Image (cartoon, rainbow, N blue to C red; front, side):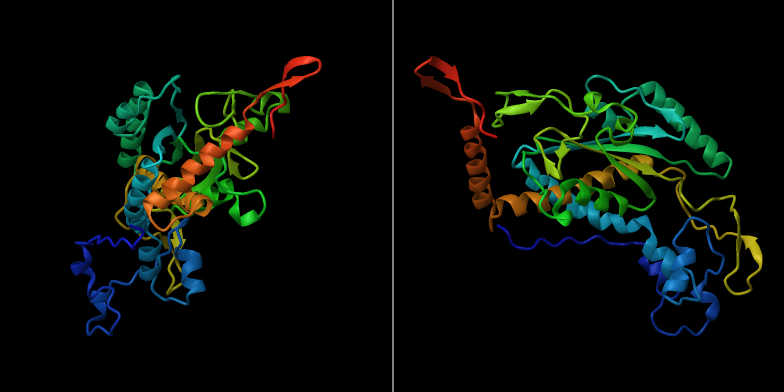
Length: 336
């Protein structure tokens, strides 16, 4: 309908923190459970100085990836909207630590969903799980790389006319906002830097597979050129660092005494790369919906659909037409 959608996510652990994180004074200071030992790699160090806090607890709780539960919930609504226009989003794990998955010609997304580590390569998945177990047993953590792909994205989302409307820029901002993500590439971004331009850019050829009159033979650009979707699958890859909280803590300092101590340990996972896939799907869905509505507008679904269908119909004007001349019948050049 176009009206606001509200969702409720209950934090069932909240009742255990009513005193420890009370906004009002607490009679027994011991119940507050202050944290003063800073964790390397976390928001603790800059957060306490930026917000003038003498307790790390408010920083570490607000910086937690638990915040993404709300974004995943909103992303589910965004995904459902995109499905109305034939857009589907998937994700999978490419690497955990130095273990790399071999990419099949066609990914079995059902198998990815069934995999404990969301990996399309069963053998690599076994090695990944073994490495995560090793990290758990040795008090360490593991990072990796995951990929999110959107199929069916129409040509023309985003814009080259303003820096803050570029689709790849918006995707990068959204993905970098996910906790522990330290790198984002669109398509084969980093790999392409090692190649000649003739081996990087995607050749364009006539096409009749959808509303576009032309398409790209390959998709090294990850579905985005000049800040705009080009009709190919949108592909984003994210590098996720190992989680900062270690069960065998690194050396750090105590905020109160300044003494060298072991960093604070807060309950934590060992490897967040597989669940980060789900967060990445939600982020990409949210970004695509924003750009989709900017392009096609509408105050309700049917109005947006009419605008969308009108845009696709308008692409027909770019299809080559047979033209007659005194020299005989020739094919006219495509209008680009």
